[in-house]
Image (cartoon, rainbow, N blue to C red):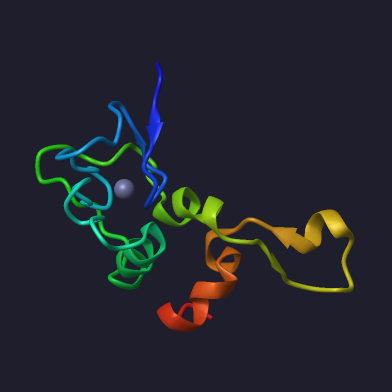
Length: 107
Ligand SMILES: [Zn+2]
């Protein structure tokens, strides 16, 4: 199935993010919420508010992990210099979002 990533939260939508459609994950209404606001600003807002599933009509996918979903927009965090390179760069949800941890208070 062809999917279309939401430019705000990277949810794989089944329809293109064109005007007046909503992303069921972050609730962005395209052509409205993103009018005059950057995707980045909207993304930060969604992350700060706890990355809750938005749609009241549709359930999130089984095993839905908003951290993992949104992490494509952020750099992985180097967790230790003493380990091998492969294990240093870990894509675990709690450690991945360097730029956001301070804001969200995960660290
Ligand atoms: Zn979205």
